[in-house]
Amino acid sequence: MKLDLKIEYLGKKEKKGDTEKDMYNLSFKTYNAQISGKFERSEIRHLIQQLDNAIIWEQHTYTTKTEKATMW
Image (tube, rainbow, N blue to C red; front, top):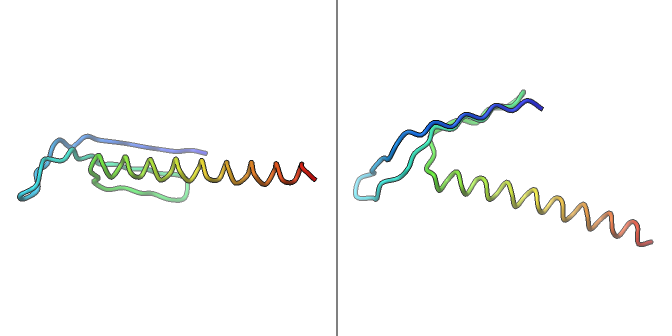
């Protein structure tokens, strides 16, 4: 699977009355889809966490089904 990921640091941006935020331009492409946009560091970390949790859950579900199938 071909995967193209580009991350460009845009620097710190300050919103009106808010603290400075580290901003990134993110581009994520596969053979049939693309996601791109400007994201705060915390948003990227949250996205990574959600992906990681989904992968761990799928592995756990698969392992549990396999264990039940071999028990009988």
